[in-house]
Length: 238
Image 1 (tube, one colour):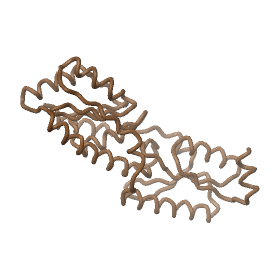
Image 2 (cartoon, rainbow, N blue to C red):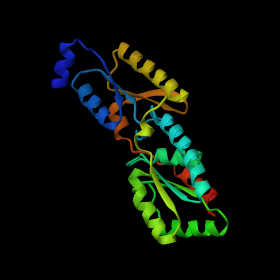
Image 3 (cartoon, helix red, strand yellow):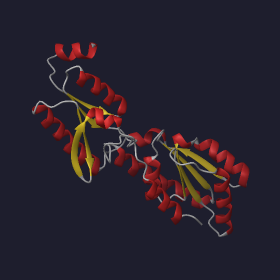
């Protein structure tokens, strides 16, 4: 109610809300209270089910992929196992996409159960075959990189290093893809408000900018890309 009073006091007759599900819930309530609001998906986690990609996700994945390449070089030179913890509490898309792009040997996600002892056994088999270095990417929602490193080190005796990428994933120069979809989504949001339409969210599906009812969008459940995960697991199943 206070937000509505402020908007009315400043003569704001339409609002574009950029953020994740929390921000969208605010936009949803304002829409129900008569303030035309449009949501744009600005979150690196890619955890809004109605859109295939959120603004910032591609930039974060590119950044993590670059860091994986750098870390692998150091791990190779010292014959170490690298455990890289990335953001993603309930949604492991950053870990999955960057892990696949960065050719990580193991990807651990909150959506999939995993057996650490089986990973340790696999790492030992890789050593026997001459693969002295492996990269494990773990989403923060699947566990802590330091705890995983300590367990593997104790179980195998290998030299294991944990790297938490932290906030470096959230900054930097936006990718061309993120710039493009942000511009396209923003344009669609402005046109909706100009047409007197509120209570919508804008996203991208099948390379097309789309919009849909905010209530429907927030009721949708995230769909995990099981096929991508399974195919990656087959590729690196030594």
